[in-house]
Amino acid sequence: MYKHILIATDGSELADRALDHGLALAKKVNAAVTVVTVTEQWSPFDMAAKAREGVAEPTRQYEKVAAKSADAILTSAEQHAREAGVDCDRVHIPDQNPADGIVAVAESKHCDLIVMASHGRRAVQRLLLGSHVSEVLARSAVPALVVR
Image (cartoon, rainbow, N blue to C red; front, side):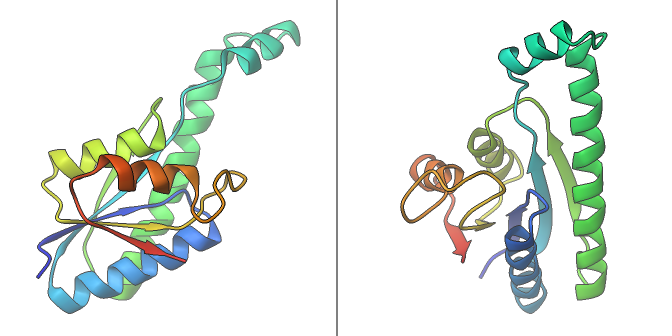
């Protein structure tokens, strides 16, 4: 059925449920798995505020913190995969809109299913689905499984 499943995660509790669901599906259908996390671009307003506070090189500091956070998220996802008995590749896409990053990885890795949570860490920006989920559903030619 599915040969390569992309599982998007931001490390939140709901994303972990989607991760576990995607891993169970991958194990059942013997599909390859790629786990992706996307860190958004830094906000110029936040960086200006940091600079006013005296933070040296706020952009570099943000990128370092974002990379460390992404590594922790992906390491946790790998642990979930090991516990599920599934091998996975891990991908971090820095400085990008999450929906754009997810769709790009799904296409470049030739995934045939995207699994993601209905909402992420950000405040709910849509009535029924998170904004990034809505964007992925609207932009991707790859089918998506949304876990509530």
